[in-house]
Length: 236
Image (tube, rainbow, N blue to C red):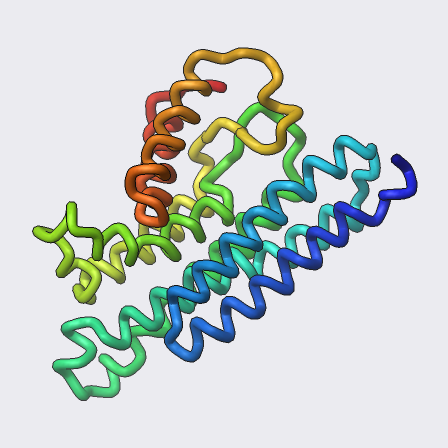
């Protein structure tokens, strides 16, 4: 097993690599391809910690590498998505003032908040919960939000994707959740789900059901469900 000591860091580098590719597609306006590569990055992020614990090769270098990768993949990608959406939003496109041209740059508050969230995470002692919304969860919420708002089940509110006010509000809520001390249960790595926990199993079952029903549109709903679990102080 020791011969695989490089595997966790290799997965971290893959996470970073996929994040960079996704961001390039996002800058070019292809948010669908961006979401695909961010999903690949999220899978790598999930497994790098699992293999680090399994192979007992956890260390400070791996921790810092993971944070650097997460800042790019899960900090920049949601900002690029919101930037694209704000550029096409109703207020920005209907006004030609200097002020309106700079509104999309508010999206990079997510990057700033993500950097603080990751720095704070590196200084925290291990516990059974996260302080603040993890950057991968925040990225999944925002990157896949267009799939949800464009889904046929939400035709009545599909216009939100074009609303400047809604998108700016999303930036504010996202940034606050990232830097807050809001407690959310940990659910990362197979080693943490060995013992049976009814509440956790219900959460997983609902999440899987949503994925089968709504596919990519389910991801924002799963994160909202996760936030609700934290709000209700449910522990896994």
